[in-house]
Length: 631
Image: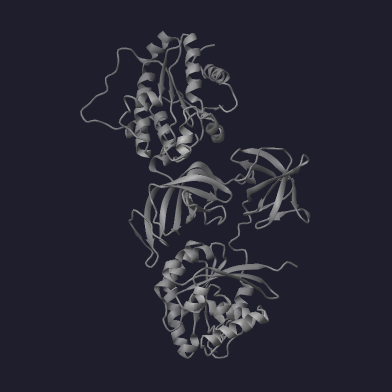
């Protein structure tokens, strides 16, 4: 029979007795070695204490022992016949909020310590809020040091009522209240006879019987690949830990970001093959087909897919002494996937004492804020409240390699335009208007121009990363269309920035304005019966949707020039990637600025493998099939 494991964390204000409580549990459950006990007895005597300081069993750092406080997160393990436990003892000082976030991130239960003499403090509320923020399913409010208030029931009831009023604002499914004295051992491991008015169980009994697994997602199979094993030509396996859900041989799966599908051939461990792997199991998966999968990819069940986006709405706890820099670029680690990211918007910070929102331009150490992030490559995620593993991430400073923030994904970041269906009518409404001007139609209608040209007008919008070959293909295509007597108009990003858009930079706002102007020029070219070939990186979906919205339905053809970024770094025809990687070029798409892949383009051309001539021929055939031109 497998013994269950419970991970729990302790938190509270300074000197509320967290470490003493853990020491008491270790001592009373006989989880300590004799030499450990003798060492603590000697240290207590040398310090002049009149009692054995049980907190010393967990206060491992020298600075902690000297100051009698907990600074770092101390992890301890113990077991009873009914259950195994891993404890994260976190600091009480306000400046160590980040440590509590670290210790509580994987916990299923939080013990919030309250000194019976002091009552509910600001730190008590702070830790309750963080437990709620981290979606810890079980909270125990331990009213400690009851011996110092003569085990007074009224004192205990008052504290319970005050915390219960505060907790009504939190999202915590289960809160249990226990009066105790960690130093004297009352209601910790054994039930106390000094508080007959309390009819509940002692703490250890509660820890042994509370529901384990409430925070585990056993439905949505998510398997971040950590390593590809290829010991010989006959074996290819993908090593990792099942982040959530379960999987069995024979089930159909899909790997992201490639989207390639296969079936699970076997679930392999050092002890042999398993019939099933569940959340928390470290295994190796083998598949029926040899498909391209590498570290950072995610394997999921075909019928149960994660969300995909590179714009993320998240809550973060800032964990670095250097304040948040809104202009900085960070690396975002999501499971085993590492991508570059920028914080596009800091919505507000949260006053964890009052739970009120405050406007701010930065975040300091231990502060918690709501942000909008954009990544250079899409993430495959679930929201944090649904899946703590695939809904969390860390931000890493690219210069120091320090972890600067821990984050919880609330969902995909959205703007109003993203939620409005793009039509010609509402795109027209969102156009910038100058007062007292009227549109002046030309002498010839679009139908007359198309009849004269012998083909229909259209806008072919080529999008893709720098160096992907979109302009090369567009130019070859224009030559082929010219040879077919088609009327064309070629628009290129660099050319327009020499004149019409020469006043624009490369910020998100300037990029949007750049594409807005280009869209208007393309619309004018279309109105004159041309096949407009517009070749622009155009990294944002909302801007490309605007360009689509001001052209009649069916006449805007989005062509995604897709190419792996590693190939682009090697290709680097203009040397831009090398300069961007060295930091010389800021806001470079794909490196330090995001690119949003088209959600549903009319055509995808693989420029990393196909020749420009062949790809241009593919587009010709597509135009013929749509009736834009005749064969």
